Every structure is written in C-alpha cells, then in structure tokens.
Image (cartoon, rainbow, N blue to C red):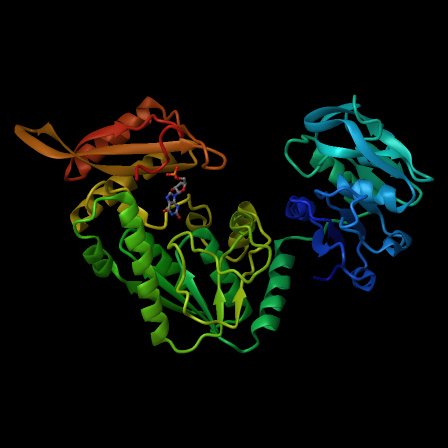
Length: 509
Ligand code: XMP
C-alpha cells in the first residue's frame, strides 16, 4: 500500500463497529477498529485522517461506561461520534447528557441543517434509525446543533472549526437510507480522503500479516469447496506458498462436476491439495438411515474422522486456517479468535487436534467482500458466486435412505434445473432439486413406468431466515420438467415447491 489513509473506528461497545468499518472500506478508504482504551500513542502512530466513535449500550454517567483518552480531542484529527460516541464527545468536552423524556427507537424523521458538512446534498428531512434513551441536552462550548427530531432537540451537532461532528442516529445501517452519504461526507468532505484503498491493498496487508503470524510454520485447512474456505486457501497460498495443506474431504454428496471443478482450481495453486474420496465410507455409515437429523449427525462425525485420519498422514501442522467471516463471528458470539469455528459444513472440527494458532484472514469481511476478494485472487466466477450449499450436501436432498443410484439421479436432475434457471436469467438466491422418496406411475412410449417424483425448489431471500418461493416463469418450469423427465432415468414426475419459509424450510430435510 503506497498511501497512508486510515479512518480509525474507535469501539465503545457498539454492535455495529464492523459495519462502520465496512462502510468506510467500501468508500475506498482503509479502516481500522481499535478498542476505545487504545493508547493515544497508538492512534498518533497510525495518524488517521479521521476517527469515528461507535455507539454503545451504556450511559456516559455510568462509572463503568467505556471511555477513551481525552487527549484524542487535541490531536487535530476530525472526529465523528455516533450515538453513544456522540454523547461521549459531548460529555467529555463539557456538555450535558440526560435521559430522554421520550426514548426514540426505529426509523424517525429527522430535520437536518443542510449547511452542516455531514448533510451536504441531502434533503432537509431524512429518515434515520434511532435507538437511544439518553440524549445530548446541552452542547459543549463551540458546538452547534445540526439536526433535530420531534423528541430530540439535538439529533446531530457540529464544531466545524475543530472538525468534530456527532449524530444521535446510526448512519451505518440500511435503515438510515442516506446514511452512507453521511459517512461519505465525513470521510471525503471533512477528512479529505482521496479514496485509493481497494481489495489489492487488503490482499497486501493480509499477506504481510499471515507471513508475520506463521513464519515458516505449516498450516492446515479443511477445504469445503465453498466460497469462504476457497478464498481463504487462495489468500494463504499467496502469502506462504507451499506451507499450506488443504484437505478436501469429498463425502460424495457434491453436485454434478463440483469435485472436478474444485480439483481443477486448487491443483493449480501453490499449496498442497489433498482430495480425499471418502464417498464409500459415508455411504456405508448412512446405510439404512432415513431420519434427517441422524443423517446430519453421522455425516458431521464421519467428516471429523476422515479429516483427522488424513491430517495424520501429512505430519505436524502448527496452525489451523479457517474461512471464518464476520457474520460467523457474530453468530458464534465470540469476540476473539480463541474459538474454533463450528464448521458449517461439518459440525465441528476435531477437538483433540492441537494447534498453536488460528489463521483467519477473512474474519473482518462480509460475504460480498469475500466474493470480491476471491475474484481478485483469480478464483473462477462459478466458485466465488456459488449459491449456499449445505454441508451434508445432497444427502439431505435425497429423502429417505441415501444410495449411490439415488444420488446420481438427483445430480443429473439438479444440474438441468440449475442450468435452466441460469440460462434464463431467473433471479433466485438458492435453487436446487430434491429427490422425494415417492414413486409414481408414468408412461414412456408404450410402457408404464414407476419412477421417482422429483421436486424443484427456488427461493428468494435476503437472509435465509425467511424466504419466498421464486416466481419462476412457467415456460422455464415447463422446459426444466420436460428435460428432466426425458433426460434423467429414474424420474417420472416433476413438481415445483411453492411453499415459503415459514412454514416450510428451504431444504426439505
Ligand atoms: P433451512 O432449510 O434451514 O435452510 O431453511 C436455510 C439455509 O441453510 C442451509 N442449510 C445448511 N447449511 N449445513 C449447512 O451448512 C446444514 O446442515 C444446513 N441445512 C440447511 C440451506 O441450504 C439454506 O441456505
């Protein structure tokens, strides 16, 4: 990185610190999160172009509330305080913070002073997400109000000469529709950013950090073929070529040609790629099993066994690499890196394997950033834009007992469905086929058939917690159904699943 332009996000315990950092990154400015207790010398050393104080759950009058070194206000660096960050600034500089007579929660109409640098090119009234029970009731000297709402007389403030700003609302969240513009105004108009930061810089930083962390030691990674572990592998192999071993446990439940694609991508990289075909082991364990949860448990446990057996063959590894991304960090509730991620795919890596450390270069990134990074690292589109795929794979899309024959039928039908969706540019977030355990009578030529009924699924969702079925055009459905019935032996009937989540789930099992 040949430019030194950083915005420090000073963490006062808010839940949105990573989102703030991400907003700054997407404006092409490097951001770094520091705890509010970071020594002032550390901030001076970074010499940021601006500082953003995050929100936080506390009240500034609570003796235990987070505080930072007040010398921060003497550095001559622009500061934007958000929510608690604004209140802290007011309090620290001699203003007053009080309990709101009426707390504000949710999207609130906010009246902005458009002369304030933060609100340049915004409307005079904008919607902003509020969530507070305290508010700044008296401004410190030199400050002036810059926004108000019905119940909050000082919803933003400014001290333009010192470049100090505060907003009571959360500009970093989507519920504040013009929030990005406000942060951009701060970063560009107030801090004077040039905006030269990009994914290449991220790669460069991580490459340095990985080299520093692992030295000449070896690293082990469980590759699932999913976006996160693949990008993680590509990044590490760039940093420390040939110190990484990637074990790809192929349980035999991948989609058509997927394992071949993974082979093609990773066998070209500077890493030790091991593809373990364990399909026989998994199928044997699953023989006679029909209960969905039982299937998941067996697959998870067997995965650990295979992984461990393979890792043993390749000697000692000091580090374990994981494609943990920021949403995983939030999900697991963990704040530091001590926890081993319960692998999405496999329900837990071996507990008795000892490593001296974890390498998690994607920990601060959101999914779309990971995809961008993957593209930069030269991974193919098909891999970086891969739709979500459950760890147990097709085993939970073959209803009832899983057999090789059923998997082959499903694989072929699923490939046709995906091809039709993609070629017809149907927008869906996840789409796949399910082989039901129902057989149905059909007629082919002059013969009666008695083959499986297959279900097609396509859903539209933003978070997979809820989902709607995708309104796939009838012409696409018809073509897919006809191709599947004609081209795939073993399927005599095709249905389209039009249930939402809830009441159904995305997967059938
Ligand atoms: P459901 O079926 O719970 O699916 O509505 C929501 C999302 O999660 C994926 N999914 C899984 N992912 N292991 C995974 O890694 C699993 O066991 C699993 N089950 C469901 C599913 O594909 C959808 O994207």
